[in-house]
Image (cartoon, rainbow, N blue to C red; front, side, top):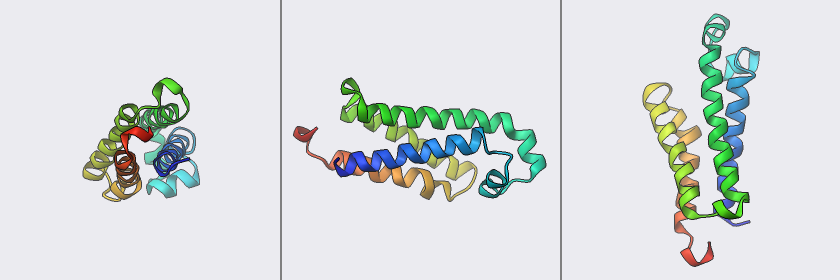
Length: 123
């Protein structure tokens, strides 16, 4: 597996983890600690977190799909989903917690740089 595919896999696995945290573990001690929430806030915001988790699951699915399905194994498909992750990470950093940039956007930017740095003929 090439470095870009490995980096894309890491970003996809990261987003699967976000999905599980937001959809299923939001109100657990792990979810409360991870997102620095109180139990009361987590209870009130659980539907919003689950929706956010669903979107993270879609990002992970798109990235994984771009790695395994022959019709989707293109630089354009991979770049699209990585770009979505970058935009989401930047938006989250600007509107929620600045560290989201380093947790979400930066790994996707690294994967995107590795992907775009590969020669077109090696796709």
